[in-house]
Image (cartoon, rainbow, N blue to C red; front, side, top):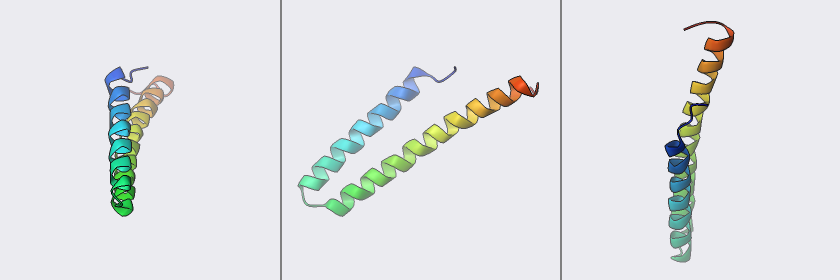
Length: 68
């Protein structure tokens, strides 16, 4: 489909790092910082996925509407 496997591994890696940081900060008693780290990680991944979906829609648009 055009989604590079590196992008999938990058999203998974960011998820693992965010989960690790969340756990460490939560155990240190810094729950507010842990929530912020999780939120920022989620927003970053959301933007990555949004750009992938945008590329997909552009390809679908070019195929069905015959636009280059």
